[in-house]
Length: 394
Ligand SMILES: *[C@@H]1O[C@H](CO)[C@@H](O)[C@H](O)[C@H]1NC(C)=O
Ligand SMILES: *[C@@H]1O[C@H](CO)[C@@H](O)[C@H](O)[C@H]1NC(C)=O
Ligand SMILES: *[C@@H]1O[C@H](CO)[C@@H](O)[C@H](O)[C@H]1NC(C)=O
Ligand SMILES: *[C@@H]1O[C@H](CO)[C@@H](O)[C@H](O)[C@H]1NC(C)=O
Ligand SMILES: *[C@@H]1O[C@H](CO)[C@@H](O)[C@H](O)[C@H]1NC(C)=O
Ligand SMILES: *[C@@H]1O[C@H](CO)[C@@H](O)[C@H](O)[C@H]1NC(C)=O
Ligand SMILES: *[C@@H]1O[C@H](CO)[C@@H](O)[C@H](O)[C@H]1NC(C)=O
Image (cartoon, rainbow, N blue to C red; front, side, top):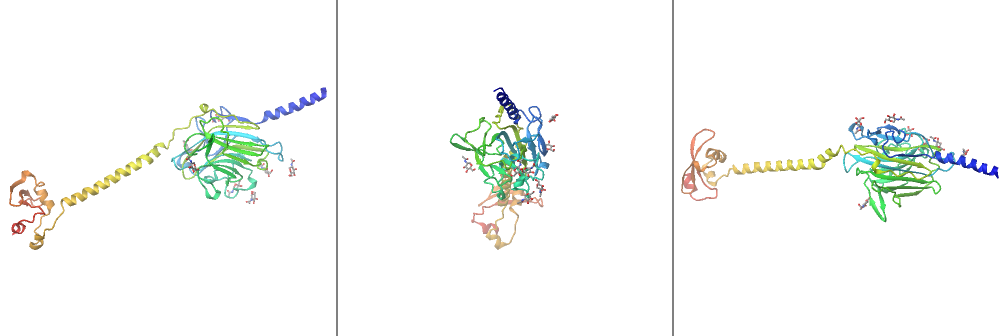
């Protein structure tokens, strides 16, 4: 009896440390070393002074690049290489701030990989995960959940705003448009909305089931219906020890990809993140530019068009004002012409002050020819007035 009890005790003691070893971490108040180990960064990834994980930077010289951030220590996913993979769960809060409100690139992926960092991986549509030669290869041993903001036909992407489960390649095994179930209703989410959103990734090692759920930051508890649910055994994908982290890349559109908080737990439910404790996102540096783009440029265009139109109208009006009308009597008597414009200037615009008198069929004005300074008298006859024209000329 005593022997049996001690055997049981030994068994219990040997079980307890194994459970205690299960990794469990949470970064709820920034990634700058205060609430956890420093992440291992590469590429253009950085930790901002207030503790945000910024996987890609918004600036010009930094486009077309990728960034990784991994938990620094290896994570044990199996007891031995041939065993089945443990259950795990993780949740994180992300935000994508693009230079433009309607274009972005290329997204964020939660990733489990055999190495810390993904050497040889490309930016742009490869999301810093794979490259053209290893994409889809079974020897990669990479599991990822992509938050993809560009539709790539080469990977059969469903749209430019989707969540996908990627196994060894970017051709998602399962994908769905970004969104969540609020009760029975499905609500769309826009990945590039610059808003913070939560993502839960869970794997049940017994049922061999992967579930991905997302929600706006205000929804603090995981919605009961997942966005993606896939029966898939990760045991052949995950090695005994792996690294967990994030990957992101940018393309032609300058984009900042942020991870605001992150929680992970092996063999259990990862703690949820408390929104109030999270580091604050920066106000968008590109907003002024996009304001200029969305309000300024159309406004300037409208003003330019108005200026051009009024300019054209002015010229037409001026042309019409001083337009020369050839009277039929002129054809008969030859061009004894002064330009109407010249007469207009000479009589100071047919001012009443210059009026000399009123004749039978028109008013007579004093004038001074601008070209020769000769004093003249001008009789103003309407073009419509046919009366006495020939007599006048004679
Ligand atoms: C973590 O990074 C901060 C700077 O972000 C540094 O001051 C600190 O020494 C680092 N801690 C460790 C354990 O490397
Ligand atoms: C982006 O990276 C550049 C170059 O390293 C750096 O000068 C700049 O401060 C970074 N921008 C932000 C917003 O962190
Ligand atoms: C794992 O399985 C392979 C064959 O499937 C076998 O050759 C190998 O010895 C096993 N390794 C261990 C550690 O059990
Ligand atoms: C992962 O496991 C596979 C098969 O078990 C092995 O071929 C590969 O070398 C392992 N990768 C690493 C980085 O240990
Ligand atoms: C692709 O990545 C692998 C490592 O995962 C690397 O060995 C290989 O050289 C890379 N290929 C290219 C074309 O960059
Ligand atoms: C997968 O990668 C391995 C090792 O990198 C390579 O030998 C093999 O040819 C690749 N398979 C395919 C289908 O590209
Ligand atoms: C949600 O997005 C899908 C495309 O992903 C679209 O067909 C649908 O109309 C959207 N629904 C709402 C309510 O915006």
